[in-house]
Image 1 (cartoon, rainbow, N blue to C red):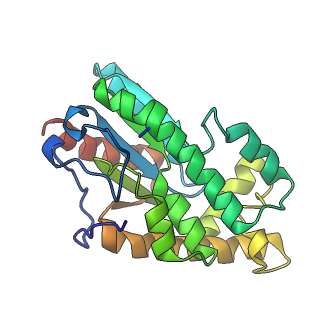
Image 2 (image 1 turned 120 degrees about the horizontal axis):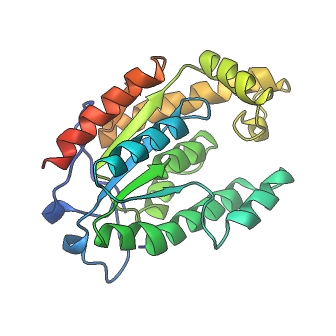
Length: 247
């Protein structure tokens, strides 16, 4: 679906553009009438183990129970490249630029073919991670920030963005409890931070957290303390989204 990012206030409030103020972060996609996008785009960011997917599921149930049609998107869900990206990652041999462009293609396909049509139809689009995770991953890997921002200049600015923040130490516990292992890429093993995956995971997630908080100062998304119970986190998200829906 359907550059340089415009700076937002450095606070912890949700940025909620009105329909007349809808905008792309950069050059966008040609031929898109922003005023026709009557739906809402909500992004939930956070590392594996932050409770992100659980919160998306709860929000979908809540929104649909209140009469709102929903659509979900996320990383590696494009029918165009998701299968190929999964296969390529299994070999752990992709260059940083190649994997960055793979993910950018995955996002662009979903933007053009899922997100924008759904918004035109008035749907609530919930993104289980959006461009911020992709940008942070690239910057942690030493990619040029201006290049990364230009790459995602096609992205539509969401109506609300939440970052579920969990310490690296807690993320380790949650990932082991769920999967009994750590993921190669989520541990940043390709960066050579440490030969020990546990140590590499802690270092990599600390770098990711730092970059997310740095981006928050520019884009003003909501940082949510996800050390709380799932119920407490969900209450925060629902309260914020309720205020968005009445605008």
